[in-house]
Image 1 (cartoon, rainbow, N blue to C red):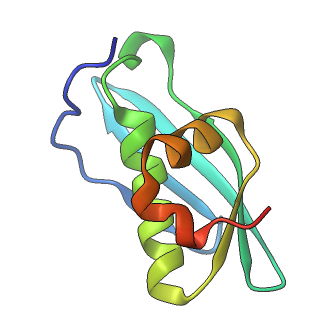
Image 2 (image 1 turned 90 degrees about the horizontal axis):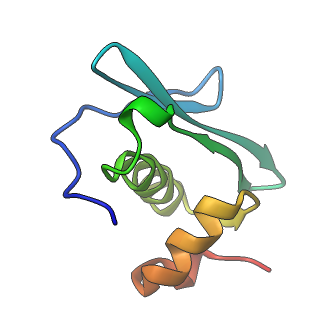
Length: 97
């Protein structure tokens, strides 16, 4: 069961196509690629030591919000991002595939 997500700053590194945040000295990240105007969410990783707190969800939300702002379609290629969009129908309009 996940707890409420902590108040964390999620940072976007457009050159690396990466979102990341830190908690308790550990870094969590989301990696994406861009293909023909589509954001492909390739990987979401949260260390076990800080897992179960909604951090992966914060990263996916940040990525989806950026995609919406840029007018990109989204392909949730990693299993966590695919599950996230199923649980959050407000992002269904962005999903391709």
